Image 1 (cartoon, rainbow, N blue to C red):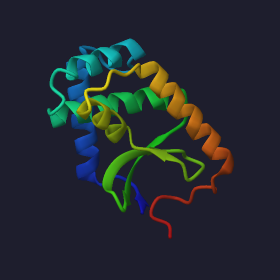
Image 2: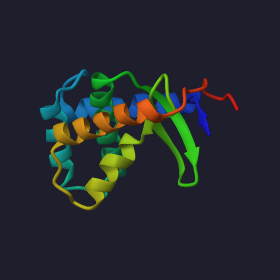
Image 3: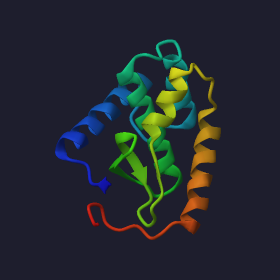
Image 4: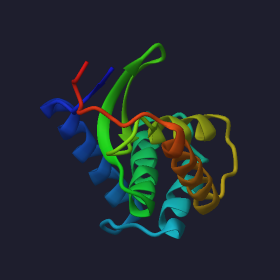
Length: 138
């Protein structure tokens, strides 16, 4: 199910972005090297959940700078997560999971390359995906 964020989820999104701003030391819009620096710093503390979320949200902001995407909540067989979705097609990405899983594996990542790869794949998927209904529509 796809739906708009609740007030509590919007507050959590804002809090995660505020933490990212604090950790990066600058307000958005962020540059790739700033989010890379945050990611690399968090490699030393991959179990810090709030840090993973902040880094995932910052990564999501980079994606939003590359293509039109909206923050929505997606619930599926894997759980519920704040994700980014195309405003026009049924195509989404879970940037918190993308970054969190890689940090959890202590994986060295090139943030700019990863972002480019995901955005390119999402654009390809848009050409094959069904037009998106408004959040909450059956």
